[in-house]
Length: 454
Image (cartoon, rainbow, N blue to C red; front, side, top):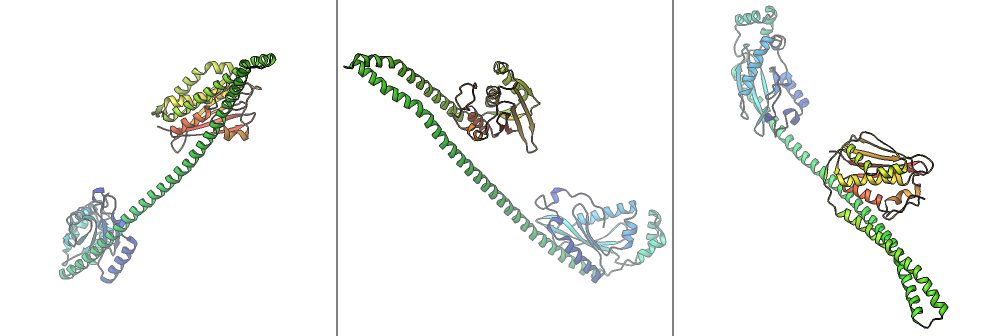
């Protein structure tokens, strides 16, 4: 038996399982060797339709050394084997056929779920004494050593047809058992695969649930901090307004009442100061409320992700900040940046804020240098780093920079709303990314943004 070729997927059980996936070939080889030792009959176990030999026991020299040793005669073996094995396609079917090289072979199919995926064969025998002249002609035709070829022929057993039928029926039973074993293993594999899939899906669901719970706890904590900070920052101007409003009531009461002239003069003198404090507090409250509206508005804005040319985007951001950068005397270096997939407007705002902060919180002791770099990670994400040699951030303040209304007490940095970095983080998260910072006071800062790749 000879002639391996590649099996097509259409012959695989469920389109993915071959016989080697469904039976223990080592155990089958052991059984076949015992069968050959006990009966003298050969065994060939081949996959179908590839005819790859998976097990072979007791094969005769006339086949292994001669018929398979010559390209021309081996081609005849392949042709005969394919004709024999392609003709069996029903469970229990047994076919006995003479090969074109003059020997007799028998085969029965291994069929699982209607697919003929292997064949069990015996053969390399004769049903009657051979014609020596035929084999002499074959020796001459294929260039065999005639004496050695005829000696190998003499070892071929001549089997009675009835005996061969009994053997082939027995092989049919073995083939049926192999088919059942294969089907059972198939069911086990499929159930195991389903179970493994269910377990994997459950683990993923549990991991996702755990992630969402962590995220929910973080969001709840963030909301608590947000409410606390908001209440605290709004309360200050409100207390001022209330306090100075009460003072105004006293001053106007003194002016309208019977107070002494000097008390009326004092009240009249203090009214402008009280009105100024009230106006300043009102402006501060207005700024805080406007900042809250910006944060709230960002939460409602729908992100429209698209593939972004980050080199062009960063060039545009730097152009829009040219005055601030020139005013700061900044030297800006930009390396080649990978593309990402995110909302164009949001990412422009994000990088604008980071570069503007670098200019705002520069060191007074050295010229400002800003570097924007990027890389694509092995796990399919884009990393961008905006670094500077500015004033840096004290270690104790690093966790606070993401808090709304937190303003770094940097002399000369100018007054801000305290929402820049919180909005940066919100933008990154809404685009499926993350942001982190490394900083040392007096040395500079590096903000690293991670965003999805296209």
